[in-house]
Length: 479
Image (cartoon, rainbow, N blue to C red):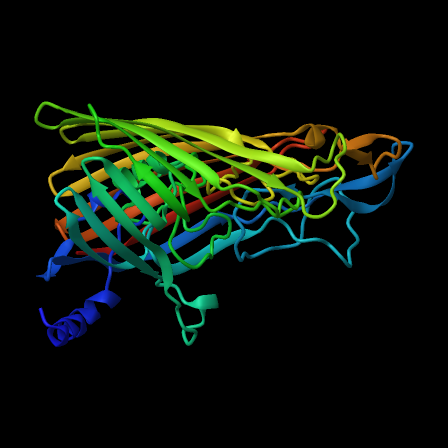
């Protein structure tokens, strides 16, 4: 092709570059790409999706602060004073509150604090996977090696700050180059991370691929894609810049190993310095049996060393470096219309929502990384054009020595030592729903979610609790 003809062809294909694909929170193999053009040895393809959902959330607000009334010789001598707040986890949202009426607490009538309150919120939201436009090109550079370049853009239904005149900026979620052949594959760029990828796939494939689930990881009113089951026994794998090698599939086994841009963990520990990249890997095994059977097993993990800035002097309770790590495992089983997925994870400094997140749940107030584990089971039954699903998961937080031993003088009983903090204990959530696949490219979803957060009981005081109910319904078109 002459240079002028190639330039004209490039101009013809340019509109397709702005429209691109989505596989985003689930494996590339789960999305059917559309070939747009072939020319000069290059294939141009696209895939994507668009739609939206009505979503209503009702339930408890964030736990109110704990109070006690001061005493002297068993006699009330003062007003109620705060002793602690619930930290880490939970679901912040705008709410209706009223004055507290706790029996036994002597509040100042002129300054009665508010109660936990009630969340009652309607939004039109993006789904678990946002509106996505993807574009890719591929060509053979040798008879046994294919070069692919891929970009993926996400756009959100929700307006910034609920202001309809604010622009919605595009999120460049993925962009990479990949070589593949009989020897395996080599990818460089931004794509899904490997740690906790298998659990995220279960959530997408068997539950929320065409739906919503829970609205946001911490704040219910978060803009952007919802989280499905993430935060309730599922750690989101997330997207990150990295370099990944994938072996050929041998007897159903494949290993993907990569080095990713390191993650900082700012917060109470100020873990803002890193030295080496973040290694992650996932080993998978897939085997089909009979006409409709399939089994998929996976194990994955990640590791990150973090340090404090400047001239750090380590002490017994304040080290200068920490190691965040995690291991995930599980599998999927399919037999005819019945699909079952189970997954688990454990590690240190993981957070509740996304693998290796920086949050008050991941670190104690002294910066020590907490340990976590999680468990998740998801069932899907395919009945013709209908997918019926239900699942449950839990993420647990384990206290550090600092959490268990850091005390102060009880304002209600001077001389008595009580613990300073009420730390998140676990978050668990149950999902259920039905998807009507009107055509292979048009999907109607109704799904429900019950989210609960519980905090550790502290001294003689019971732990706080928060429960939210979520109802969602909408439509997605994909190509």
